[in-house]
Length: 433
Image 1 (cartoon, rainbow, N blue to C red):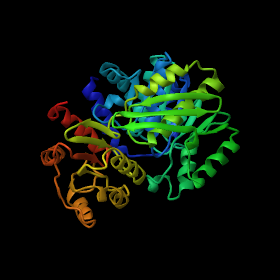
Image 2: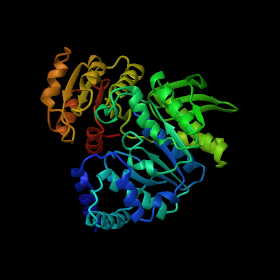
Image 3: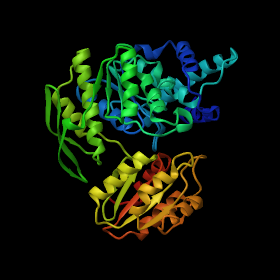
Image 4: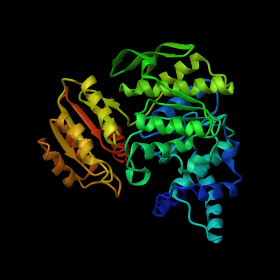
């Protein structure tokens, strides 16, 4: 099996849908020798911010001198983004070889009459096999969907982290914050410490209850521990005080005030490793890890004159963070938006936040069968009294927005990570930095 064949096989398993539960992945991993049991993991769940916290945590561990695995989803441009060690994507040959190994075990499962693993289960198995084979010191694992029944939840992490919880995937996770929080809290393991981003009371009450039941130490991150110093399109400086540890003038190159809380959550997670597990992580490693964190496609400024901002905001909370950033960093700029949203998201709520900020909106259709049609999205935009046009072709939609923009304008491209990945690839060929 070569690399292209491996990708074809992996993507071909999408037809088996999303099936939450641990029985299938547990059996597949058993056939593979239980590679996940050889890993020391940090497990991160949440509705918003879990990707940011995952990459920050991994960056800090790398700067502390550890061989650090990173497992994230989805990817933007290159499938191999999902499985990394020290910011190096899994090599194509290794991906092909391990996919073939996993495929053989899947075929054994099918011969035994077991259900076919889902795409995410297959990718999870490949990632765990790679990290175990490469003997990583630590693996930072981002939950795919929910937590309790997500295929990554077979691990027994050193520390669990729960980021901001909000409404998303309500058809799967539940229609109340309490139900969603219960699913996220499923990653909490007996006796293992849990770091939690500030939550609404309804969600926090559930997390506290689960921690009490499982006798898991709960460490809450607090807004009051953060002191913002300065904030610009080049990044942010802040102070952070966590009990007996004080960090002065930390820097993150990420935009959006919410990233300060994500950074505080990542810092707290590694401090818990230091305190509870005796992991050697210096203050210098924490500062350096944060300072070089990269998280493409999330409030990512990719060009100036005109400003071009990419953000995969795909739910109302994410849209609000984007709106706050637009108001904070670009208060006087004319805004031209390119929007492409999945139909199973809370489309109207997203539009209600973003549309009033735009002078003109171009709607398009992300690379997903779940995407809302560009014409239908434009109809909803026009109901909010903003003019625009629908362009199905993503590249043409983006180029049209760039052609319209004056040097001081802001072009915002948002709505779905399925859109952002393709846009990033296109812009690399047309923008001169």
